[in-house]
Image (cartoon, rainbow, N blue to C red; front, side, top):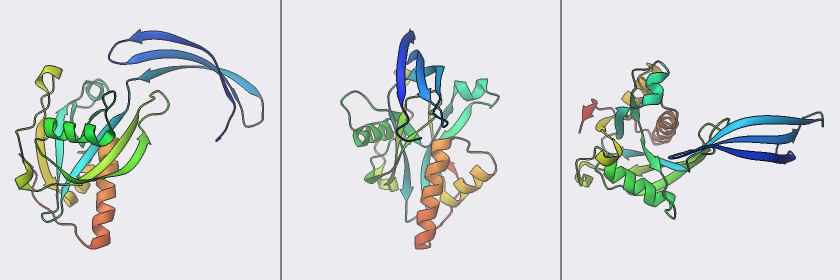
Length: 205
């Protein structure tokens, strides 16, 4: 439906805080050409980045494990294993945001960051787009403890595991975060292409 005519009739701000919630009434043409008037509630909290660091020599990746209230309220235990991620600040580039979040959450300085996807996270309700990166790291690149920003309530455990083990965790339901699954699958495809799918035991770092 690229190029579908849309006319916004009204925008009502329902809430403005960390995120802005809007009720939008708009008119859109259906596939049969008829006009439909619809109402949707939309959340806008800006755009984001995520990165999955990969040690090619050891075949390992770095994750953040933390409590997510929304997942808990949806019936999960709330402790999610995720790619390091965060919002892009005003005036900040995606790469700068990715490096800042990596140093805060994982305690690593990364090399050769590569943007691989620029995706909408949940376009039915969110305006957010997320830029997904891969990057290189080695044990020598650790510059701090990680753990996130305590003043923001973050309490992040840094986890290192083999790429193949991460794939197994996805298959077993141990990793259920969408951006993380996308990045692991991307790295797996790249690793298979060069015949490199080393494993290592998961371990907190």
